[in-house]
Length: 386
Image 1 (spheres, rainbow, N blue to C red):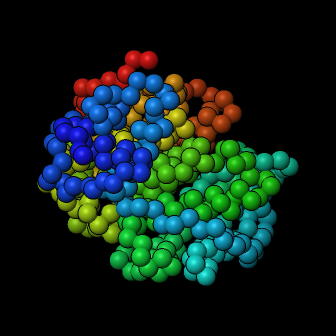
Image 2 (tube, rainbow, N blue to C red; image 1 turned 60 degrees about the vertical axis):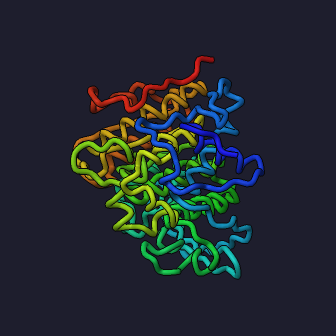
């Protein structure tokens, strides 16, 4: 049985979570939804009314998003092994290079660089998979470590190459068909598995960040792993914090991204090219999956390809869910001047937001200012009154 109208898509995911047989129809068979889809809508056409309903709704939406957009996650690996390759002092702490192996017969391996602050006790941790773009700049490492955070950096292309090549998880799990963004998000999860074995890591205060395509992966990592207390995509654009339905200026859209990077997504995501209004969710839905955990979106005003105004629109829509759950102060957005990079200003904003969320330092008002006060709302629905 399928529900009609705007609730059809949610019905499919919810049926899956309840163990019922379900098929996911092609894009052309889904209803047209011109506005940003309502994340509160249940399959029976009614909307959820209480916080206790959200977790089941969240699982339904996650199932839907993975099936249509990103593809399923790789199997969870239970056999992670660590070998310390080197260790040396840095300003304010120590840096270690560690080789992690995981998967069938240890078939997936990554190099992890840990920059740890001095001092006893447990430290919060920031994770990024952007090592493939080069080492994090020394001034950023100093800032992170100096603020009392452990910085964990890995190369997501060791998890899976940024191409159609069958390396990493695709070689280890030959039947795996999810996209690269899902595979890279899985890499964040495996790094967390290792960090939680360390006595000096505070497992309740782990943040995931990344830039551009790495930001897309970080957003998905946070949406799919509740151990991530703070998710912080930077300039992540289309397929990340941006918006598929609302495009401002010359920015990346579903046509361009699926043409240039089809391997990032689920095999059937291309069905929505020219039919984006049949997508049963938008990126505000992905952001909403993180609630009530913390989410920070950092954007550059000159990064037009990443659709920063669209990111503000999805932020506002996702905030409806955060507010509904009583977590409105746990979602933030920060804009800066400049272009497409992950610079010290972005990292400082992340650290400030982490200090606020983890330790109550600072003010949430610093992360609520909009750069586009006249941006369209994108939806007519509002959160249910509790």
